[in-house]
Length: 293
Ligand code: L34
Image 1 (spheres, rainbow, N blue to C red):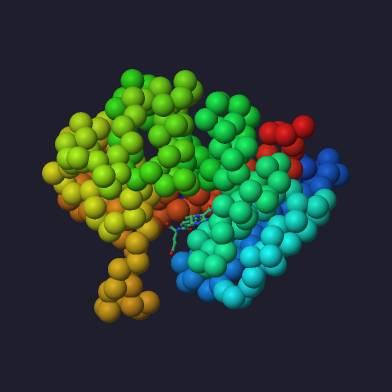
Image 2 (image 1 turned 30 degrees about the vertical axis):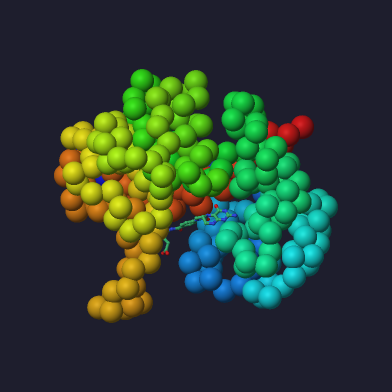
């Protein structure tokens, strides 16, 4: 069993990005600038956004964090998005999800200029991804593909079972793994809460992408010997013995599943750090206008 070290890989890629930033500076060009909008005080979102800002600092990007209270109006967020769309210094920006219930996430996403949509959530980017056209890939799937590639994991002809059909992970992951590409060419089954006998599908998988948001959902008896298991879940479960009062567990029962795997990602230190690094890669692409114009 090989543990896929997302933290280490992400540190390596950040060094590569930092070297690119040095070249940009040496050429006298504008350094990449990422902005993040964080609404409310969801503790997990605060951690994720903090990791994004710190990572920008680490690679030499400029970053701007825009915090708004949980009761900010939808119109105010739309106005902020408009300002960011128009700000020539900002290469790309994200609005961290989830947003408070009174704000329509779809409406906010649609307001973002696709050229600055480094999350790849705007329908223009989703459509371009589905067609295999130049686009910003959503950060979590992008990070997973990078892990598969850098660990030399063959995907062609493999049966990939994606568990969970969210817009930000399961659905794009199923599309990307099935496409004709270096980390694609899989036969994909997209499973979800209404799937009949999901464990039977999981057992037939060469590659499992667990992104259903249920702590330790994937058990040892749901995994074939030699499978590759990518755990996207980050669930906070109560743990009074821990300093923070909680611990992080994935969507995979790691201790049972790991011994059966050829490769597996841990939580934390797996997909999470790769999500952050992929956002940096998209911001670099935005700065270089690699995707649009
Ligand atoms: N707009 N909303 C937007 N873009 C995104 O790309 C995200 N996502 C997801 C939630 N909402 C979003 C993230 O940023 C998930 N996500 C994310 C980002 C970073 C980490 C996890 C999820 C991360 O850094 N995880 C670390 C530790 C986390 C901790 O200590 O709590 C890890 O090792 O997994």
